Image 1 (cartoon, one colour):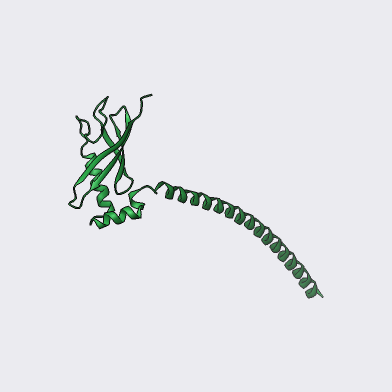
Image 2 (tube, one colour):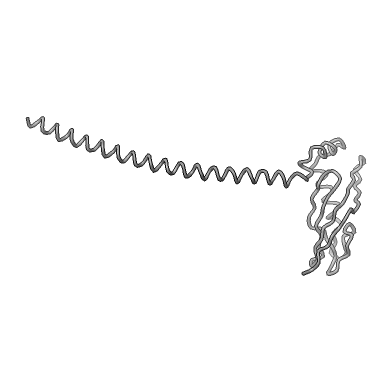
Amino acid sequence: MKNSKIFIYLFGLAVLYILFQHRNASKKIDLDSQRISKLEKKLEKAKKVADSLDNETLELSYFTLRHDEYASEYIEDLGITVPQIEGLVLDALIENNSVDNDNPLVPVAGMSGPTRIDRVKLINHKWAIADFTDSEYWGQVLYKYDFSKDRTLSFETIASHIYPKH
C-alpha cells in the first residue's frame, strides 16, 4: 500500500510536470509564431524596398554606356571594350584641366577662375555629359564624341548650361 501511494504521488507529480511543460511549450510556440509572422512582414517590406531599388537602379542606368547593348556592340566592333573607351573619353576631357587656364573643351569661360571638368558620364557610344566649375559657378555640358577606327577621339559641344549664382 505504501508503494502504491508513492507511485500515485509520483504519477501525480509526473502528470503535473507534463502539464506544466506542455503549457510552457505552447506559450513558447505561440510567441515564436508571433515573432515569425512579424519577421515575415519585415522581410516582405524589405523585399518590396529591394525590388523598388532594383527598379530605380535599372531606370537610372538605362542611359549609360555599360547598360546599352547596342552601343556596347558598336564599340566592340571597333575592337575596344567599354571600360577602355570610358577611360579614353574621361582622360581626354579631364586632361585638359589646368591650374591656370580654362579647359578648352568647356564652352564657358571661367568667371572666378579657370573652368575645370569635374565629372563625366557616358550616355552611350556617341554622347557624354560633364559637370564643370570655376570653383564658384557650376554648369553642365553635353558632348557628341566620335571614336574613329584609327582610335582618334573628337568632341563636339552640343549644348551647355551654367547655373546662376544664388
